[in-house]
Structure formats: structure tokens, C-alpha cells
Image (cartoon, rainbow, N blue to C red; front, top):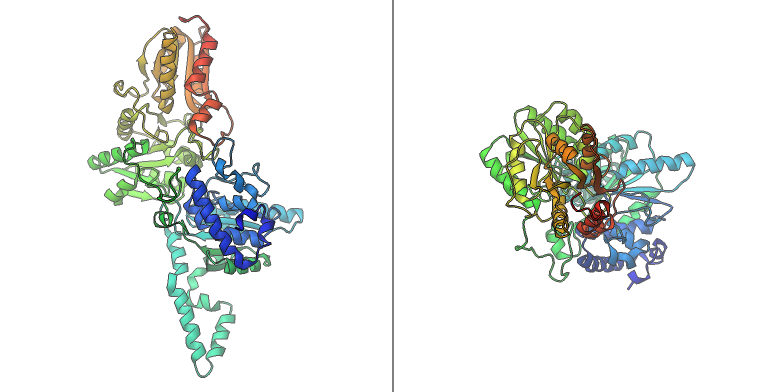
Amino acid sequence: MYLEKINSPEDIKKLTIDKLDILAEEIRRFLVESVSHTGGHLASNLGIVDLTIAMHYCFSCPRDKFVWDVGHQSYTHKILTGRKDEFQTLRKLDGLSGFPKTNESRYDSFNTGHSSTSIAAGIGLAKARDLMGHTYNVVSVIGDGAMTGGLAYEALNNVGRDHTKLIIILNDNQMSISENVGAMSKYLSELILTQKYMNAKSGIQKSLKNMPVGGEQIYNLLYRSKGTLKNAIMPENSMFEHLGIKYVGPIDGHNIKKMVNVLNKAKKLNIPVLIHVMTKKGKGYEPAEKLPSVYHGVGSFDAKIGVVADYGKKETYSDVFSRKMLELAAGNKKICAITAAMPSGTGLAKFANMYPKRFFDVGIAEEYAVTFGAGLAKGGFIPVFAVYSTFLQRSYDQILHDVCIQNLHVVFAIDRAGIVGNDGETHQGIYDISYLSHIPNLTVMAPKNKIEFERMLEYAIELKGPVALRYPRGEASEIMVAKCKEIEYGKAEYIYTGEKIALISYGAMMDEAADVYSELIERGYNPTLINARFVSPMDSDMVKDMADNYKYIFTLEDNIHSGGFGACFSQKICEYGINNNVIHNFAFPDMYIEHGSRELLFDRYGMSAEKITKKIVEIIGENKNG
């Protein structure tokens, strides 16, 4: 066993190069076994094992800097940098992060979690190195899926401008989470040409060398020429060269010896280099090789059997969205669906199959998706952009500038809103209310359960102007399904009416609010329970009612405090004059919330029903009637 002897990158260098393939096999077995217990990103990490070993064999980390795009493929890097014994805590509260974290290890040079950032960050590190007079290497690893993101192109446009020394490794597995789309994916496929280019090169070389007279000389002349034999056969591969970046590849990303040879040569160059590496997502674990999308992000599973579909599970909000979109699109040919490289994750895969002409996967390009949607809306269609909350924040300017100023009817279906749990601070959807609620013309809604969600989606399609519909990850709630009054624009729903004490919540937090309400009733209190429904516009009549008739008012939400519903409510109630009201906003603190299960994070930050109830009782005291 070689892996048990690896506690730092220096230990890898003690192995002979022919032992590295054995180490790779051991790491793959370790990954499958470990992730099957903890859950995590599996297919992407299995695909990059050999490349990561080659990188650490050639470079001296942490002096040399590795920047991992997204970072969901950094597990092997973590293993090789002394963290393998912590893998049982992967993505658990206070445990090992599923992404690179500079405060977790000195071997992590840059925090990542979102796509398409590594080249830009790498240029910054390389420039800082040059300005400081240092000589270390900077290596940016980026996937072909991430190359659909605009930030990657902005970085490429700058990296070759002044010939900054930087090594870019393009890890090409022809996938992001789902199959890649767009011109860049096609271009990279043409670069590879699978066997066509390789066979052509081999065939020409063989034919020339077999010529009785002059063949060897012609081949050598072509090989030494400025264009090289590769460019003579395939001149279109010079896109990166035109940007001032030396292109090398494609090379087999599972051939460690070849990669070590290429990386050692790249280190000696003082210009930007892009090394195009071909890998297979899920490599070494047959179920993941066959179904890489299924094994992109997994929960715990039996490693011997693989992930088994749970056909008895309840509908998730994404499932409800998928079903309702098909129903609405069948009756309205103006409805279009947009996703940023996540048709399966957002529930649009069935829509894509049913209505391919009205479905648009734009790649990892949220900014483009929003402005593209604005164009569709201006042209008379109703675009629905399904996107995770954490990724929508990348397109703030486009929401405000391209959609809302023009009051265009674009529907933002915001999945994974609120605490998402184990992916941690880069993925928590707790900021969307804060960056959306203040934008003029934008209607922001959130459903308390699956029935209300369907009605709100239908309502959003019928409304004029931009609409944001926010819903959480996981099972669609079935609380209070019998209490779903008709939706009236900008109006809250009074679920239970009491006296002097009011609980106001919306969306996924209504589950906690309902539990708090029940606990207060049991303790002898008589609160009012309100489902706000609309974050923007806020129900002015409800706010005035609170100001005039309730002494204790508590707002509950799964957003940060600043700019959240509670903060907006507190500001708005001042317009009516506070009549000795006591207002307390339950929200997440204005900080980045770490990884961990939803339940444990809610408990840690005082957002569980139990802790909210306890705090309310402390504030009200024994005066049960206020």
C-alpha cells in the first residue's frame, strides 16, 4: 500500500514514476469507499486522479500554487496534502470542506466553489509573483464545462496580452454536470478529432518515412516548421495561439508518465501555456463511468451496488417545477425554458425532450442567460430561467439593467434557495432576498408548500413584468395544504388569527413557523400566523395591521438579516409609526455559513423551531396575551 505512506506532496516524489499508477488505483478505491459513506462529488474526482498525481509529482506545492476551478474535483489534492484521515468528516459540520479552503490547508492557494474563475485568479497570483520578484509556478485547472463561462474568456483575453507565465490545464471530459453544449464544446471536440487527427499524423509519418527517396527529409522539414505537422493537418487549433497562449495537446489524462513529461517541459517555459488533457469522468468505477451525471454529486450509497434510484421518495420542489412546467407549456406556446448547464438539476430535462425548440441550455453563463431571456421576452415570449440561488447572484447587473428597468416578463425560478447544507458557504442560497427585494419592478414570491408552489408558478406566468419565484432544495413541503387561499397580488395570507403576538414567515421557513406556532399554542399563547407570500411588494395592509394591533411581532426567514424580509418589514412598519411594538427578526447572521446538514446549521444559528420558540418566550415572558 503506497497511499498510507503519503502524508504530504514530498512523499509522492519518493516513489518511482512506475509506481504512480498503483497509487492512482489505491486513491480511486479510497475515494469510492469514502464518498459512499459521506456523500460528495465522486465522478469528477475519479476522473482527475492521475492528473493530480502528475501535478504534485512535478511541482512543489505549496510554494507552487494550484488553483482548482469550482474545486469539486480537488479530493485527490486533499488526499495527497495530508488530509486523507479527515475524509470521514467530508462536508460535515466542522469537518473537511468539499472545496478548496485556504483556512483549511496551506496547500490550498485560493478558495473556489463557483465555475470559470481559475484562470483569472491564476493570472492574479502570477502577476503578484512577478511584482514580488518570486519564481514559483502557478497552475490553473479548468474543466471544459467551465470554459463555457464568460469569465474564462475574459481571463484568456488577458493572459496572453503580456505573456505572463502561467500554466493552464484544460481538463476535458466533455461534461460539466450535464453534457456540455455550445461552440466551445464543439471546438474542443474538433481539436481532439478523436482518432482522425492521430491516425492522420501516424499515417502521414509512416508514408513519408517509407518513401524510398526524400520521405524522411520531408517529414523532418514539416515537423520542424513553424506550423508543425499538427498545424499542417489541423490549422484551426490555433485559437489559443492567436490569444498568445501556447497550446499543447490533446494528451491522455490517464497516462501519468506522459503528463509528467509534458508538465516538466511546461515549467521551463516563460510564457502562458494551455495543456489540453483528456480524462474520463468516473474513471475506475464502472457505475460512475456509465452514469457520470448521476455520480456528479451523491449522497451515501452502497459502493458494491452503486446508487439506486429511490422510486418511493416524495416529490422535491424541482420535481414539482418539472411537472408543472410541462403542464403550462402544453397550453401556452409562448413559454420557453432556460438553464445554465443544469437541465437535470433544475428539473428541465423532461421539458428539453418534450419541447426542444423552446428549451435553451446556454452553458455555464448565467449573465448571458438573463439577457438572452430579456431578448426572448422583448420578442414576445415568456422565458423561465431555472437557476440555483447561489448562481443567480452572478447575474445581478443583467437582472437590474436588462430585465427590470425595461419591466420585461422574465420568470426567475430560483431553486436551492435558503440553506443547502453540505456544499457550504459558496452554495448557500441565503442572499437572494437581499439582492432582489430592493429592485424596482421585480415581484418576489416564495411558496409555503407544493400546492402553493404550483399556483405561484402559474401566477408568475400570467403576471406582466419580471417575477422571481424562490423555493428550497429537497422534498416539497406538504404543510397546511388545506390552507391555500387564492393568490392576490402583493397580499399576505393569514393562516391563524390570534391576539397581540404575530409570527410572519414565507417560503421554506413556514415549516419552522408552523412548529413554533404549535409550540406557543401548547404553552398557552395565542399568536397570529401569517404567510407573507410576497417579499416584494410587501403587503402594506398587513404591515399596518401589525403596527396597530400587535405588540410582539416576529419575522422568520432563511436569508441573512441585512436586506432580508425582516429588515424590510422593520423599515416599512416605521412608516406607520411604531406603537410600542416589539419586533424581532429571526434570520441568519450577516456572515458566510459553513458546510453542514440543514438541521445542524439551523440549530447552531438559533433558527430551529425549538430555539426560536425559546427566544420568543424569553422576549414575551409570562404575559401570554401580550
